[in-house]
Amino acid sequence: MSSAGIPSTASGLLPLETTVDVGERRAEVAVLPIGSFEQHGAFLPLVTDTVIACAIAGEIAAAYPVHRLPPVTISCSHEHAAWPGTVSISAATLYAVVRDIAESLRRSGIHTLVLINGHGGNYVLRNVVQESAGSGTKMALFPGSADWEAARNRADVRTPSHSDMHAGEVETSILLHSHPDLIRLGYETSDHLADGRKHLLTLGMEAYTESGVIGCPSKASAGKGKELLAGLVESFAEYLSLPDTEGPSAGMSDDAAHTSGRTR
Image (cartoon, rainbow, N blue to C red; front, side):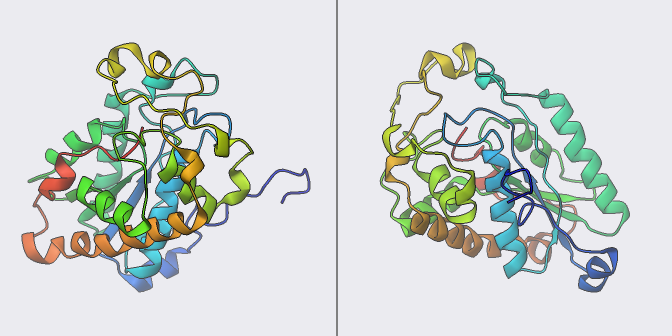
């Protein structure tokens, strides 16, 4: 807690290594958390997706020899524009930022970049990864749909993945485990389902929810959040081995290529 009474959230969200630390590790793989700055109902903060992406990256960095990067905190949240506080950048801008980061890493000797995507609306990340073949930097998008499914099963998440779209059981559980101080009262009574979202990209979230929630946060728990992260860390081992099996200019796993994440 800061002197102003505001929760201190820097712990665990940002890498605090020195250049000496990074040089000694000599990591061959970098991980880049990509979040968003968008509404998550009345009980989760605008930075929820960034916190989740950082939590995943932090657990991965604790388990594997990777170079953990600070997060991209604003991305493509246009479908949430009806709610105060939401800020977006264009898909072209996000694309350019990721490509520039990859180029900078390549110049420093790191030729593999895994994008830890915390926001399902960042569709353009699939294109960035797809087009990385032959660029000198291998990219992958994590977690893929199979990674999330394995983690959800391990954590005994009860809400189906399609129903648990936004500020639901998964996202609330991860924050309850990693940053419970960021959650406000009300998640226990905020369940809202809207499985029929055929025109989401055209009409935006406001056509399907008044609260901004689509999912069942009442079923969330810190224990589920812990197991979700543990399951994702286990799945990441496969991504770490990609440089040895495909070479420095290869692309990505098929699963990661065709998924944009589990929530929006």
